[in-house]
Length: 457
Ligand code: OOG
Ligand code: NI
Image (tube, rainbow, N blue to C red; front, side, top):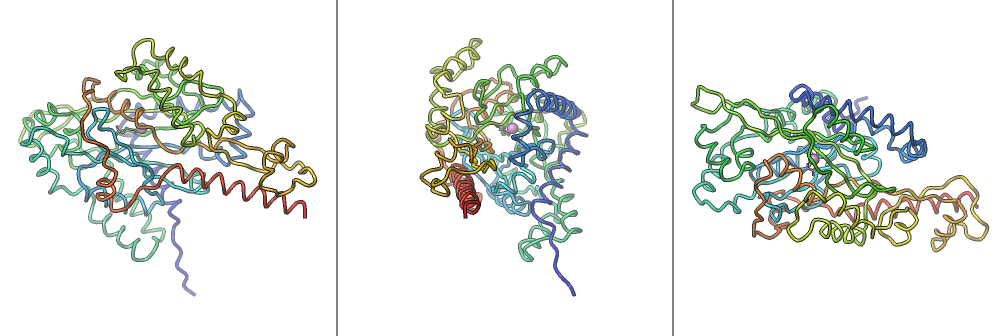
């Protein structure tokens, strides 16, 4: 009997994430040091806070922690973006969210490719923040044309990768050997290529227009520019980076430290100087592209919670959006207005929660009644834990971009968000992250009520 056995997209994603981590560790040794720091900070945090350890375990998140990371790439054309979407689909990763960074002076818009179900996220939550350059925002017409020309004839995928993506689409899966080949082939797209496709003079002109444009247009592929492990205590990790003499970004992006972490806090170390060989030049030049980042993830916020977050963040940054020296104090001050205990976050519907049975008997008469979820919570029969934020934050992302673009390029572009154009380039709509969290919450409510009802019957 022959039976077709596919390697699951979840497994292919886990393989790819591990292969990517291995490659980046070899190419950027400081990344290996970040992994060490995060690993020891996480171990110490779990030891210090057994409740957190128990929660991560109960939520199925404990096992994913050591393999959890995100990466980022920047592509130049609609065709490149659309092919990436097909490649990520092989790994069970779908485009979620739309990020417009033009307002922060970065001429790109973006999405995050990631798994979308709780089970897939817990198996391996690897995500890739993927930006598409918006050449139409470049003022210099000549440069815009030259950039488009340069991008028009580059191929960032190997023939093998393209063939295997098509095979996956035809068959509906890849067998073990093909899956292994796919991982090796697609890794080539993300690898650093030190030989530029342009000469030094062209690079300099692109660089003068915008460092980001030079980074996207000059090279053979969209090299992965960072890989970010998840820490449970970013302040401790940041302190350790500084103690080891790593040039960390001055300010941690995102919300301040809180009793209940929300959304995402991130810090990075500045980009490395890479040796580059320009076409037609004997002497080597340099380019800075790749950096390291760590992140701490907290609760996913509802639209109301997110609105409050955006408002308080804007207040802390002031009219010019800056992070002046008193910024940490201003941030902490502004966020005094954001409730910081789980009950308040839940009751005010500011964050999404996962509901599960505690094993304690439900009060008689209340069993399985949707309206009585709060009664079941009060009776201790059901517990609620915040759902982890799996996405990114545009203001933080802009800060991460800026910190390794030299920080000098702050002018905002006038182009408005262009989600429709982005989706057209992508060849598919992006999923709404709020809808995904709401679905996860609702599924847990239905499951816990069915469970309590079952136990009662
Ligand atoms: C992406 C920056 C965004 C994050 O974690 O917010 C990002 C880039 O620099 O290409 O990765
Ligand atoms: Ni990042």
